[in-house]
Image 1: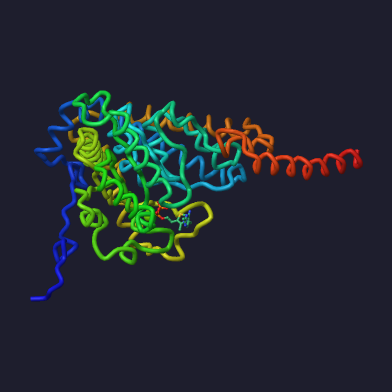
Image 2: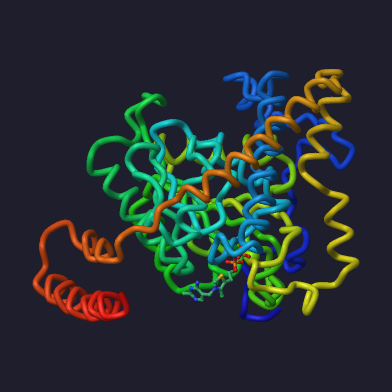
Length: 385
Ligand SMILES: Cc1ncc(C[n+]2csc(CCOP(=O)(O)OP(=O)(O)O)c2C)c(N)n1
Ligand SMILES: [Mg+2]
């Protein structure tokens, strides 16, 4: 026998995937997660209809944002089409006091946290530096530098420990952090460093990676030889792999992970297996590298359709409700369309306002230089007039 041993099964593909709703929308019983979902009525018919509406609304906002980019109203748009269950499930899994640290395409998570979609658009239009107050809705601004949110999230979680907000036994105040990132970002050194710190300090954090199978044109199998969920186990961080197109499985798994973390059991890692139906961003052409057959295969696993089938099986959805959701979604898209034309361009000098909380001599000097530079154009305008 070889002296080398693997901490994981030899056949990596054997990693099980948590699923509560199969492709037809049939619910599979699951002792642990059913108890979690039932405890707070998270899978009641009313809640299920709510998740359905959430997903329909955010998809409409997403499609409208793509159109607005094509019309020149946004610099860029990163679509989350197809990832609605992975995001709505994770967003609702968090408790109000939890702190979420997202990547740049968590539109469903933002929606679940109460962030209006036009605020996301402000950022992609370049008229806002962040879009919302992170403290107000306990959701950090979008992070575009891959993996950079992970150390910040762990630092925040370690701060919670020091503030005595972990493991007191009160689930309504004990707090966890949810760090979100993509499969590609999980290869960044910062994520590995974050796993080290989180494990060493048993920080109250859940690492949540949406594995959409691609990091732009690089497929997941090139980035990892084992299912992503198995990576964190080398750090001693328990992990699960979940069907990311199954809103209930995501909700139950992420809620369980966050609650374990808030109870002082240390970090957790969740891999949600999903697929983004759209290209990486509006600057990308996925047809250059993604097989059509693969896109077709995932289109059939549409998360919205799956929840609708489940609701139909329960006889808890009717045509009226579906039509009302579609109407509301259409209204939301129209609101975004009108809203964007009303967005004012900010004075560029504001970019110097917030790099530091307190005045900084280098920033002050750069601000003066910028004002001098910009003043030249005022003269030009006067001359032309
Ligand atoms: C540090 C860093 N390197 C490179 C990029 C450029 N970049 C933006 S998104 C992306 C791929 C990310 O893939 P993944 O983490 O799987 O997320 P997805 O976009 O698929 O949701 C890359 C390479 C970046 N933003 N930050
Ligand atoms: Mg990816």
